[in-house]
Structures are given as structure tokens and as C-alpha cells.
Length: 145
Image 1 (spheres, rainbow, N blue to C red):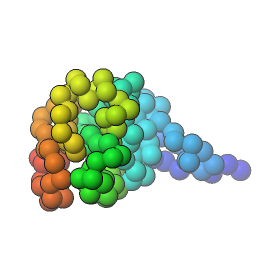
Image 2: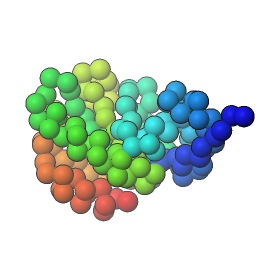
Image 3: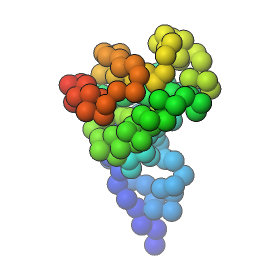
Image 4: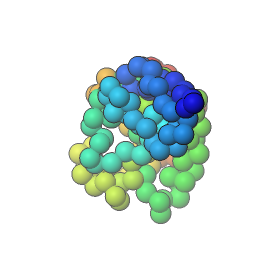
């Protein structure tokens, strides 16, 4: 007998039935396509190909624009991971590597990293630049949720 679990999509809120043996296969929501791994507390990895569809499918989203060589980005990284776990099911939290995804970085005029982009209903509503304190990020996120 194959057991299933229900994972609520952080984007559209629908419950998805996932077989236990497929949970680690990075399942996506059957309705909107948002990765369900974010519902388990991991940041979503955004790419140029899926950025717009993921952000627009979520009521609230936080995107950490970063690069692996950036020291301040490594400081913010664990904060973003904690927020992904804390806000699982309430907001889509993820990371965009600006070196690997230059189209999206250019579209949102990312000139300094880390840059945190806050979206509500698919629209950019706020931005934070630099390694800011976690409380400042939480405060902005709470205002858009």
C-alpha cells in the first residue's frame, strides 16, 4: 500500500496529494506549478525560465537575489532559509542566482547583491538591498502577507 501526504501549495493554497516515496522528487503543485518543496521549508530556486510564473502564482513572495561569491549574500542565506521554514504555506520564499539568471536580474535592475525583492499578487512592492537584519526582512514580509 502506497501512503500519501497532503502538502498545501504556498502559491495557490490547494492541497496536493503526494506519495511518500515521491516527496524528495521536488514535486510541483498540480494547479499552479509552484514547487512544493517550499512548503516543506526550503527556499525555492528561481530561474529565468520560471521566475514570472512562480511569483505571479503566489499571493506573497520574497526573492533573495544573490551570487555564490558574495560575502554578504552568505550572511543573508541562512536567514532566508529560516524564513522559508517559518512562512511555509503563507509565502513563497526563494533564491535567484544572478550569475546564472541574468535576464531576471536585468529586468529587476539588480545592481547590488544581496537584493531582496518583495512581491504581492505578482507585483513588485518593495526592495531591500544589502545584508539587513532579519527583523527588518520579517517586518516587510509581514506587511505584504
